[in-house]
Amino acid sequence: METIQALLFVLVFVIMALSMFFRKIPALLALPIMAFLIPLIGGVSLNDTLQLVIGQGALRLHRAYTVMLFGSMLSILMQKTKVAENLIKKGAELSGDNPWIIAVIMLLLISLLFTTLGGLGAIIMVATIVLPIMTSVGIGPMTVVGVFLFGLSIGGILNAGNWAIYVDVLKLPVQEIRSFALIMFALAFITALVYVTVQLYKDGHDLKLKKIISYSFIFFISVLGIYLLITKTGFTQYPAVKNFLHMLNAGFKTAVGLGMGILFINNIARIFYIKTKDYRLHWSAFLSPILPLFLILLYNMDFIAAFICGLIYGLTATWKKGSLNLFIKSIFEGGAVVMPALVMMLGIGMLLNAIIGPGGEWNAVNPDGWPVLNVLRPLMLFITPNSPIGYIVIFTLAAPLALYRGPLNVWGMGYGIAAVFLASGMPAGAVMGVLLAVGQVQGISDPTNTHNVWLANEMQQDVQKVLWNTIPYTWAVAVVGLLAASLIFY
Image (tube, rainbow, N blue to C red; front, side, top):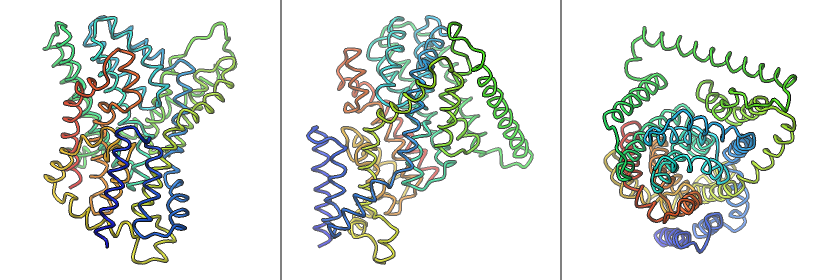
């Protein structure tokens, strides 16, 4: 009986996956449908399916989508106050006319902005400024699209709003997520530098490779040094070094805290004497997009509180006549922009409850556990890697399954599959490693992403060609990321 049920589970997954692949059913409908059918097949009553899976499942990721909601509000505020636009323009002014330097600076700025920004509206807003800047110095249209997609995905790695779901689903501490996210950031950025260099060479630019190698080496050493300081590994085992770094860390936190406090007070004071006709965007406003990230990384502040601080700081730093109305509009529009992703997360929560169970009252009344999980566990134990090599090989070969809303796509069935692997005994950190590593294939190369479609159309490129242009690099990032995850979590 359990074998038949397991086969039916797989059949439902395949049908829904193919329906999403051929765009017959959108993911936001496919996920709730799976969440409804799977428990019924597993032997859960209709009443329990409706109440425990559909009803309670919609609330399962409430913290994650609340964080996302506040992050979207800050994103819209940064657009409406022209902070993001001016940040891009300042970067362009400082970069000169060297195509490689301009491409890398644009990559850095896009990455920085999308540690906070999100949504197609923000992508279009930033792209309308960045794309002409890059094309004006002779960077090819395919390269322009690739640079933007890499920057977008790299920023997403350090977007604290995206970390919340790992806390909710995998129950990982923020420190562990942060450490691996920094590794993935370095790997993805180094790969992006290789991509930029190769693509500009294909575009026919005369590159000064010695300088490029020098700049890339300096960046790599800097990132490695920052990573060692943040994670306190390696040489920090020595007490003297540990004490010094502890003092340095405390001093840095204090200095940053005092600096931000002084800037905030200064911004409050400016509100009372600034005149609209003399209004210019103050330089302190450029700190608004990264403030939440600083608060979370340095002070372990709650995600929602960090974004609220970013909103308040952004309001005071960009204050002028009508700012309060602009702020209220940003709050409302932020909710509207994030609604499609929020609805998707409702479906993800339902699917999580369908596969691993609602817990709580159910487990108290039913000591045998959740029926669906009992059926799936033998199957998942059979295919779950139990060694670092198996982990790398299996998920390296499976990486393309993140494309076309496949089973490893985090905006498809990814979190449901992740929950099953977690329940089958795979370390939570290793599951996160799969999602973050393979997620680069999805975030950059997937032709079904709305931002891929828009960017390709804007630069008059075929979205499928963007896939083939970027996938060698994104697959390489996934492989190295899986290797790093296997060394850390197995």
